[in-house]
Amino acid sequence: MRKLRYVPQPRTLVSITNRTIQGRYLLRPGPSFDDIFLGILGRTQRLHKMAIAAVTVLSSHFHLL
Image (cartoon, rainbow, N blue to C red; front, side, top):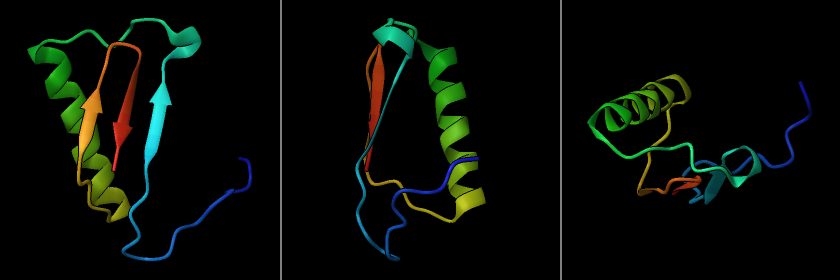
């Protein structure tokens, strides 16, 4: 596992962008995708004790605040 580049202070707003491999349109909109994506976010919030202020999901990438 690589070294962390940035560890934010508590209660700091951080912008995260993640994209699909080669920018492919892999994040297909729909009820089942929404359930899976929101389930993963919810689990991540519980495991890492963080709050998510905003989410934007497009076909090739997503943004979190």
